[in-house]
Every structure is written in structure tokens, then in C-alpha cells.
Figure 1: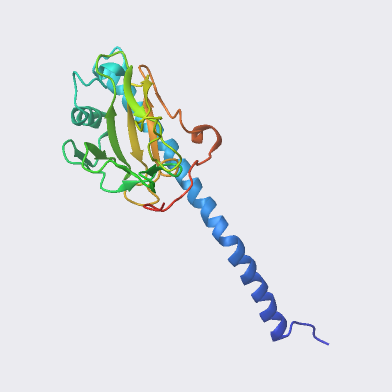
Figure 2: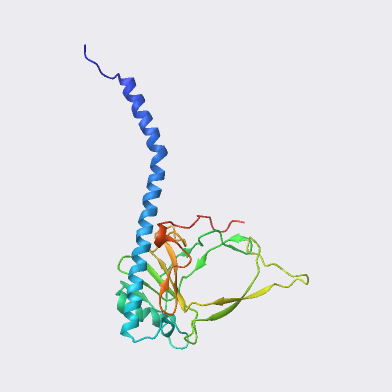
Length: 230
């Protein structure tokens, strides 16, 4: 007597397989996407580090403070200088190649609503792998030290006031020459720090990803949130 499965048994088995696949596939896809972004982050950091070192040698710089210096170069000029080492697809020294909004790594509030960072219209460039770079300069005398004033805010981005109704100000001390923001996959989402966008600190003698651990533990550090929500 021949043994086999009935049509009903086959359909039940396929149904179970389908349910298991539906439950596990989204997680597998998410892990794959994260792995791609981790690899892109490492690749981008590597090419930027090499380009910075090459530029330092080519321009006979004592430190990166000589390049990221407001009294010597504008961000657009720094973009054009780094372009010689990076050989980008497109350079936008005046009008930005960065044309999209960028979310913070965690919920960022402004005046009570979730908000984003705006690098649109600033000097930037598109690299051969499709990543996009934006330059910020904080240093103005070569020392790579700067100060700026901020004010205390509550968890929703509203100013905290003193007993007289005035904002409470404080001074921030910054020891970076500047920073390089890079979106490793360009306009493609999620366009968020800690996911596909990174803030690379430029110190006097090195660049670092000091706010993230992706280089060491392959971990992305972000939580997606919608914009404009109270």
C-alpha cells in the first residue's frame, strides 16, 4: 500500500509554513537592512578618514584645525579641498546637494513638537557610492575650541523659565574643529542620525564617531519617530 499525504495535510503544512514565514520575515528583513547600513557606515568612515589624512599631507597641515578654520576657509572651500581626495560625483559648494530633512537619533522636540535637522541648501557633495556629505566648522583660530550659548529646555523642547519668566542660559564648551555629517545612502531613507546618517567629529589630529558605537559593536542607535507630533 502506497503511503503519502492527503491534499488537506499538504495545505495545512503550507499554511503553517506561511504563518511562520509571515512572523519571521519582517525581522529578518530588518536585520538585513541594519547590517547593510552598518557596513555603509564603516565604509564611509574609512574613506573619510583616508581622505582627511591625505589632505593633511597634501596641504602640509599641522592639524585639522588649519583646515576647519573659519578665519581661513568657508565650508564651501573645505568641501572643494576635500573633493580633491574624495573625487565625488558632484560638488555643491554654494547650493547644497543635501535636499532632505534629517531626523535626530532620538525624539527631538522644538517648540513642543517633534522636529528634524535641516542641512538643505548648505555646501555639500555627493560621493561615488551615493553618500552625501555636509561640512560644519566650529573653530575660528586653529585651537579647535569654541563656545556657544544655549538655554534649558523641557522634554518637549520648550524653554524652562526662571522665577522672573526669563530663559535660563548656559555656556557649551566644544573641543571639535568641526564636523562632517554624512548620509551613507543619500536621499534614500530613513534619513536619521544613528541609522543612515552620522555626525563625524573632526578633532585636531583625527576624526571620530564619538557619539556612536557602530564601529565597535555593529549597533545602530536610533528610534524612528514621526515629525510634527506633540
